[in-house]
Image 1 (cartoon, chains in turn cyan, yellow):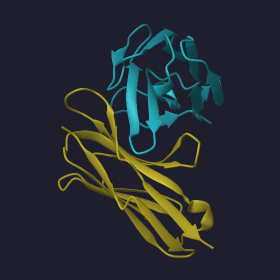
Image 2 (tube, chains in turn purple, cyan; image 1 turned 180 degrees about the vertical axis):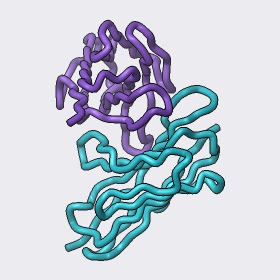
Image 3 (cartoon, chains in turn orange, yellow; image 1 turned 135 degrees about the horizontal axis):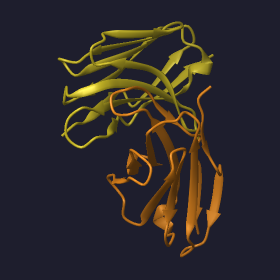
Length: 113
Length: 113
């Protein structure tokens, strides 16, 4: 069965810390995405990548960066965590545009204190 | 600009009832439309994907239809069960403009035993 794995289910960090969220997919998908989900705001795209070392900004990239050194791994980096980055973070992957389903990981609930 | 709307925002039904969830979108330039299920605190699970050239897809008790010309999709759930309680989201994959998936804000379904 297809799988998107996020490294942590829950994470608690302090303001100002550098935070790494890792995502690995085993489906050889070209596209990978990072979303955050907040009550009342729905899913918002932070960044996506359509190939190794390629990235595109989404709707809310400020305060975040990403890294994709290998096809199966897409990392989200919070350079200096702030309390307004407390959220559920969801990673997803898919085949090239138009080709098929979007698959999600189980999410990381990040709390920044 | 593509917008995706889901009505109602919440729905409560007795067990055994057949029900319909609605999704509407404003721009017909899509590759496909996908329905997801999300349990509290979890990631999204793909239920059905309908390509833009298709009219419907079925999986078990679920049937999704797509009318691209009117910008509407419905998810039909037959003989609802308490285990169907979850939030259901639809998303379209844009085929024009900036590449992205656009999500609705979901319908929160509760099936009462």
